[in-house]
Amino acid sequence: MIKVYPAEERHSADHGWLKANFTFSFADYYDPNNVQFGPMVLLNDDMIEPLRGFGTHPHDEMEIVSVVLEGHLKHEDNTGQSATTTFGEIQRMSAGTGVLHSEMNPSPKEKVNLLQMWFLPEEQGIKPSYEKTSFDIEALKNQLVPVVSKQPGENVAYIHQDLTIYLSDLEQGKELSFNQKAERRTMLFVIEGSIKVNDQEELRYRDSARITETSTLKIKANQNARFMLIDLP
Image (cartoon, rainbow, N blue to C red; front, side, top):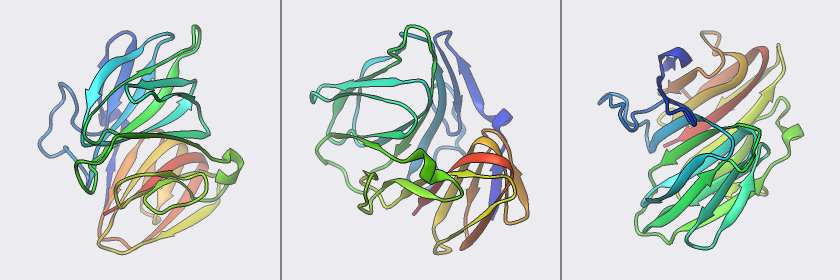
């Protein structure tokens, strides 16, 4: 089953320094039918003004992944970690037993657009940790490239949950297949362009789809498309 969630139906928030779109319930937006998809509980599409961001705040018992689409994001936390990421890099933080961190736009001129995702960990009580990895942007061309996974791999950020996040740049007219066990879940999110899934559903800019009871996906680009696929338990 493929259920499409159009971008324009996402809940939006405008705080001046932050413009955000929520795929799941978050902050003042609550829908009891839209709190999670498997262990995935958050997918926020954030645009942050120059020299602004999320000041130091706490988290615990959550796996947090940030994918910067444009601009730069600076991370600092109370474990001593500090790093700046941009597209081509992945930031993964395991909040575990508790961490304080900030996420800021360090640029005095450019905005930063990022996808922030939260996943429930497989087990609680793990030690907080932070990881920054990089991937080859050119390798995304017409391929699904794993960038976050519980399965170890070169240039793949480790996450404490049985999931894998893939990115792809699919050229117009090209097609990819993705196979998995039918009892697993798949999340699709279109970053740019337009794709068609199993010759049925079309997803455009910032649309998403939640897919269940489906073992094979055929993804075709109606126009040049950048998208994210998440394989979930």
